[in-house]
Amino acid sequence: MGKQSDALFQRAQDVIPGGVNSPVRAFGGVGGTPPFIELAQGSRIFDADNLQYIDCVGSWGPMILGHGHRYVVEAVKKAATRGFSYGAPTAAEIELAEMIVQAVPSMEMVRLVNSGTEATMSALRLARAATGRNKILKFEGGYHGHVDSLLVKAGSGGATFNVPDSAGVPKELAELTLIARYNDLDDVRAQMSDEVAAIIVEPIAGNMGCIPPNPGFLQGLREICDDHASLLILDEVMTGFRVAYGGAQARYDVRPDITTLGKIIGGGMPIGAYGASKLLMEYVSPLGPMYQAGTLSGNPVAVAAGRATLSVLRNSSIYDDLEERSAEFENGVRAASEKHAVPLTFNRVGSMWTIFFTEGPVTDFASANKSNREKFSRFFHLMLGEGVYLPPSQLEAAFFSAAHAKKDILQLVERVDRVLKKVAWEFGT
Ligand code: HOZ
Image (cartoon, rainbow, N blue to C red; front, top):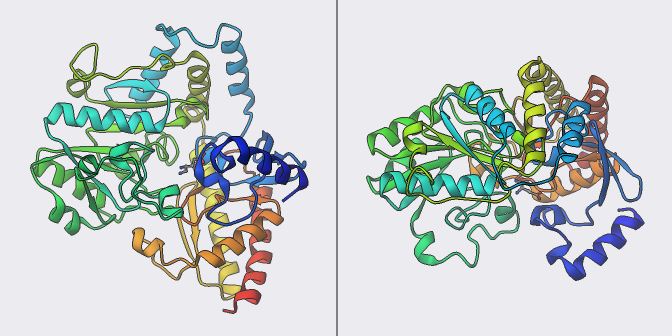
């Protein structure tokens, strides 16, 4: 890495655990020093050494319009001049809530929170409050933020660093979390009982790399929940407004009981939301007995960025353009993999994707884990050297934005081709 990033990483490690404020970005999954970012614009990010990268992380998904979109920046500037935080209601938060319920019909009412973690934590509490049950079911390799009940067989950093079950979670609480294999309805049926408050699932897994649901998987979960009078929570923190304006539930035509959303509804600013039918949301305080609160919830600056982002997304052909460019990239990667005889699996839904270093197919956590991590790390660092910023773990999803122009895709394909040639040479085929 450049001299400045190296020095910053050294300095950071004295005062911040691992030098980072969120584990995956410490590069523990690939080794080396993370670039310290100073600026992001469009499809590019720039580090402290003034090195430029094509950004395929996009703040882990929300930057769907690219960095520094003019309209969003203007909205943020205007909101900031009116005050950063009031801890009181505003008209703008009603407008954002209205945009969300119009886009996602299963969310008749929505509560804004400050992160995806807060959204999933609150969704679980709501499911437990409404059903009077304590158990929940999640999937191995599924990650829903750092909620105690959900740091059991978790993906993302937990899986990357081999700590899928976090220390500090009381055993008695972890025991209430049942685990099933993603894309395996028989396993879900075997685990389910009438004691389960809810199944929580990423409709497209994004935290064990990108893994699409098998045809019928989400519908099957809906049926199993109905059979047991349990609730279905779709965690759309990554997929909401990303794979379609109405999220994965619109794309796959499945109606959850509760939905969680994340930073994309704030254009990348700290925000999240959970929502459901009016009947369920009436459990939430001050209407009902389930307590959940937050001074920064509905923060006016984040809400302004969110409204601006959603209004650009709503009135555009962005999803078609993203599909076209992402498919072009996928084809380029597949061709390079064949040309250099490097076996890999390219999983993609719209603009969300992962290149797994295994022949695949990759359909669940076990198959994602068959990837050759050493090869992935080498690929990652060679790509970084080529000016491409990928998620620094085999078990994370990458994202394109509307700012990734055709020429960016062409450059990416050329760079992947060069890098796979080196990988083939170094590792053999
Ligand atoms: N757990 C996040 C990705 N799935 C990473 C968050 C971050 O490091 O910012």
